[in-house]
Amino acid sequence: MTKPVVAIVGRPNVGKSTIFNRIVGERVAIVEDMPGVTRDRLYSKGEWLNRDFNLIDTGGIELGDEPLLVQMREQAELAIKEADVIVFIVNGKEGITGADQEVAKLLFRSKKPVVLGVNKIDNPEMREELYEFYSLGIGEPYPISGSHGLGLGDLLDAVIEYFPEDDGDDYDEETIRISLIGRPNVGKSSLVNAMLGEERVIVSNIPGTTRDAIDTPFTKDEQKYVLIDTAGMRKRGKVYESTEKYSVLRSLKAIERSNVVLIVINAEEGIIEQDKKIAGYAHEAGRAVIIVVNKWDTVVKDDKTMQNFEQKIRDEFLFLSYAPVLFLSAKTKQRLQFVLPAVNKVAENHLLRVQTHVLNDVIMDAVAMNPTPTDKGKRLRISYVTQVAVAPPTFVFFVNEPELMHFSYQRFLENKLRATFEFEGTPIKILARKKND
Image (cartoon, rainbow, N blue to C red; front, side, top):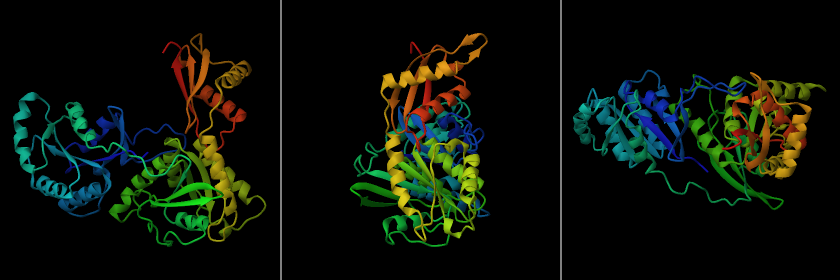
């Protein structure tokens, strides 16, 4: 299911990033809790009244040395293209500026839903200053204070009113949706064509040829699939077209719609930091993952080349220790026959459900082998375990004190589950809950 996309637009210093951080509830782009993953965030996930959405901060889009008004117009155009709902932020203390009016005209002509937020309205006495903002033609202005968190509830109420009721797609549950993600020019489109046996997607050595996600349904051995090829994700600072900034968002949309993600790596270039960032998106989304090393035909090899390359992947992608690795060549179709069987297997594991009594037997045996940790004289006690979800498999451990579930012991329990059951290719979620909750 694809989450609605909300974009925040407005001129500099109106408080866009402050509001962005308020809505997502954290200081983004500062702390990342996944080992081996770092990333700058132009987007994050938001939630209001049980509705999830992706939030874009256009203030993070750098458009070079263009004049301010040109930059703002381009940011607004990108938001119009990508977003389902646009939040237009203006400064209540400064009033309407020429730049505000230009962007308002652009947003009005777009026919996209726009919610107008008047920021820096820090006290009720300032409400009278709202009336002039009706002249922008956007609609009702919502008074907010990003720095104090005031008025954001009313603003978000208005935003979610525009969300579509049904954000599903036309594919049935038996169809395995496969997204291909990776940096530009790693061979994603070539891999799509090789798997289909025909030239269904334009292939080019020019990075960024695939601008949008492209769906390609097909059937193999009576199993239905959809291949979702995405625009290559580029590293910040290496992007010369402003539209490339949103290729990450498009890839996120593809990941959300998929069951299985193929993370494609260029064997010629090896692993770089951006590969880890891209892989982190798939892991965080809880999708089944296969790491595909493409262009393997171009690598000079000996009897240890593949083994050494896989070990490097394991060292670099610590958070993807569960993901199988395939070495292949889309160009020569070398080892291509292993892709769909691997997809079928990890998709099946992603939906695996373990019987409760078997699960509890395994965990109790694990605790007997490696007793639970203690802290300040108090020992973690696991009373009961149950699986509450699949895709990914999610387990709730009912314990005496959830804070006693140290991450190292949680990792031990996950390893025990993986050693006992077939969870290759899928992440596992372990949640600790107090017994009487």
